[in-house]
Length: 265
Image (cartoon, rainbow, N blue to C red; front, side, top):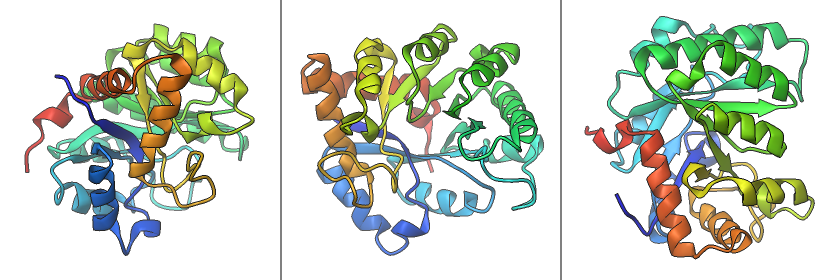
């Protein structure tokens, strides 16, 4: 597959931030060359809204999973069978986002660990890639991915902000690395260094919208069309043509999420 367009590999346009303008948001993305979008699940409650969108738009796909920071008691815990059931939908192409986040809360580390392992088990069972969120949990994240043999399903380290040592370990496990608009922020020198070292054939880009709008849109609600700014910034940073960067990151997305090319409603 070759393409001169982009994919937003991680966003949340099912959130209430887009309640009144999903169609306009998708149109702006398409008009700016962002032809495919992955909506990533963070809780059970939002799965219906994801399905509603992905069944309407042929170029939009979804995942099933629960964010590590969803605390016990906020909603009924997702089960292995439930993840596997949702994964049967033809346009659910990945598992997550899952992982570990000790930045906001270390008191739930044990619960996060158990939930992470459950998602890895589900991903291996249904043979769909993982979308991994990791923050202030480098050692434990790599440890669990290794112990659970997550190489069997593969996946992506989304919105990556850690150091090269962790990136290298994730790459060695067969994972892709996804870079968000954070790389354009003034204080992101370390992330820019990491971004230059990631092999082009293992690199994805994302918005994580509605969060983390890249420069020059920082401070605004982020949306899939803004991934163009991140792509242009990264291509320039890495000394690659925009056309080659767009083609490679798009091909990488469909290599990691092959079900996305097969999905039909």
